[in-house]
Image (tube, rainbow, N blue to C red; front, side, top):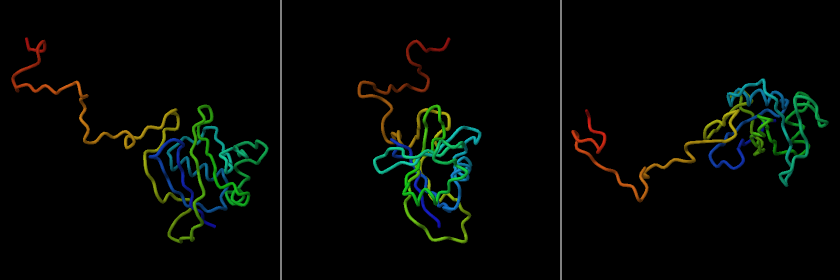
Length: 168
């Protein structure tokens, strides 16, 4: 089965990626795909958390078994079968940085696509080792003056410099 998942970052209105995934893949293979797609180093400690409808973690799947199974033994299909439709991919454990993967819908298999695949994206990729997600689209000030209300732009003649900056 092919499923669409939407990837978002909590508190960011800018970042979004949509993936089409063959549900037979393991969470470890999904981790490898995400590392390639997001250009992350794959030698970091990571884990997935299954999130319930209240937003609380109910299971944790790591590189090592935390008691719910390890990423290489749990398939995406088994998470769907267990109604774990929201997965939190923690890609930086010390800082708690994560991406939320939310099941959107089932998709028709497309012979022209190689699964897993990225089908839609918006915003910049979050830095793997930065505690803050910054995207210039979120802070753009197009058409806004760079001066505050109390400041005014001074104009100078071509051969005139501001006082104190005259040439020697």
